[in-house]
Image (cartoon, rainbow, N blue to C red):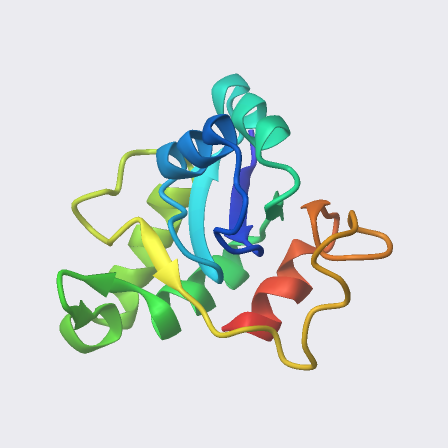
Length: 144
């Protein structure tokens, strides 16, 4: 199974209760927040419900490292300040191999809006930015 990066793209206006609860279960409370989760059957089912509010896709190990190094936090401190590069690389390996790394890094990453802006936040991937993407690494790197 792959590790999925899930980014909330749309805001809170007129969100149906079922979708709102699904986004809460995914820990995506605000736009431009990202979580890394394994591609399990339960997570994929939640993504089908929230597909009109999130963008998701598989990510590579080097992109996860860049995300943790730049945006990773533990408590209220940046991960790169309190851990060395070798420790961050071991955390990346645990996240990618689907082990529980909750106590090693906070599960939610706060990102910037993408460089160059969104294409369209109301249309699915080929035309817009919602739904499943094949090139999630490129989209995520624009937001780090």
